[in-house]
Amino acid sequence: VPFWIGTVQADTFESSIALLFCEYIVAECWFGPTLASLYKAVPQEVQGTAQGMFTVLTAFGNVMPVVIGSLQKDYSLPQVLAVTVSGAYIFSSLCFYWASMNLPEGPEASDSD
Image (cartoon, rainbow, N blue to C red; front, side, top):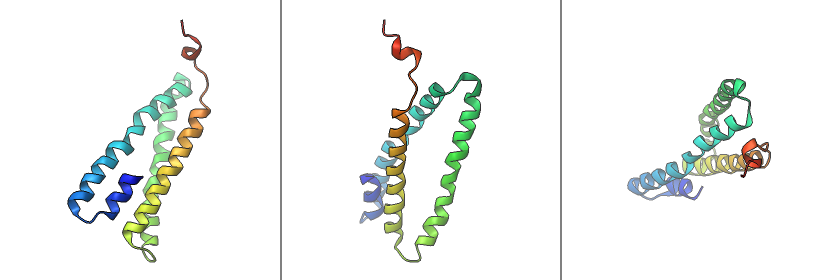
C-alpha cells in the first residue's frame, strides 16, 4: 500500500515509475503461493476446475476501471487510485489471512518424522 500511494502521489514521472516497480515486485508475489495453496486445499481431480474458478473470480477486477471512472467525477485520479487500490489490497490481505487460518491440515503437517 505505501508503494502504491507513493506511485500516485509522486512529484515526478521517474519517481512514480520507480515506486510502481517496487509496488509490482511486492504486490505480485501472491500469485504463486495462492495457487499452491489452492492446489493443496482441493482434491487432485478438481484442481483444474478450482483453477478455472479462481481465474473467473480474478476477472471481476476488470470492473474496477468503470468504478474508478465514475469516481473521477468527484475526486482527482490520484485520490481515487490511492483509495480504491489500497482498499483492494487491504481487503485481499484480510481474505488471504482468513483463508490461511482455514486451510485443512494436510498429511505433511502430521508427517514430521
